[in-house]
Length: 463
Image (tube, rainbow, N blue to C red; front, top):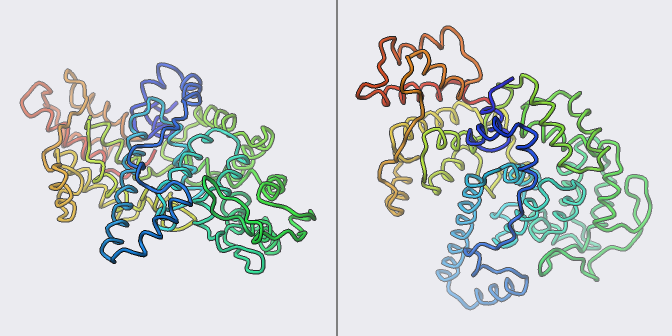
């Protein structure tokens, strides 16, 4: 069985959970994760941001009487609020005792994409994120209904422009292609008729609602069923389709365990999801319990979030500058609340292009030398000076101070790499030689050099 540290990266964001998994056992760890409470508190940084349609209209009216500079200042302020929301979420990810809910929130965040750049209302993006968090382990069909009727989604996928006589198919298409069934499991006619059923679903005070004079109440045919269907009914029909469970089980397997899951596994877990009426918690329980026993080490490339948070955890960095971490994630192509398009982050091999790999190695060098991320970049240096973050980081690496070079190499290798071979062992013993004395002055720096070499290995990029 693989080390629990590797599995902790799948159930959280770093090795922090390893000891809990080993002491509690996987089943108790999962039960504790599923029981985590949903926090409905609205963060203070949103207090001055518009929450309702009325408040948004009032701000738009206010902008009409302002100069271009004043309007720009207001937009700048909302951009800063968006940045604060990213920091808030990063802190939740790293501070939760059982972070699986946040890991699942991040999964759903990349499934039902809705970005601040398009929506432009922070509170709606926050509401969207909270729907995902509250329903992280809940029912897939229920979650789909809530998301489709969120202000963020109807704006992001242009359903605000979808009305009788002037149909916009964006939301209807992505509901089928990206959210539920996947390409090849619906017709263009289903998209057109679904758009008619969604016509008039626009912005509301707290959630999207139908506008009486914009909705289309003509009967339609949707997946062979005839009637007048609105959002909830359309989604009920979608989830009756044979292919309904497989897109999401494939994506869950890719998110947690395999970059290339077999179709046999996709169907196996998809059939189970249908059996439990699209409840996500029992699916996850089954998937983790069964895949845990397999030798899956090295089957998935770490995303940038897992990569940088594992480094932070291993080096015991208490407070890494959050803005610089977010800048690193954006550089790596994983901008929170800012995916490149409605398909979200593709993941897999895209997390390990030559440029991304080079950026990761640079990040490892900086952190192992007690420097902030981006400290060799002038733009980020200005950011650090403004935030007074240019001082050196306090770093510490755990290792057996009574061990030999070989036992310390083995200890780190077991934590960081899923495999070792003779060539790698020789490389590591060149850094930490046979006569290494862990009690000597400079011993920790020598082990840090070993650590830095290990985290630059292609194997460290994998879980």
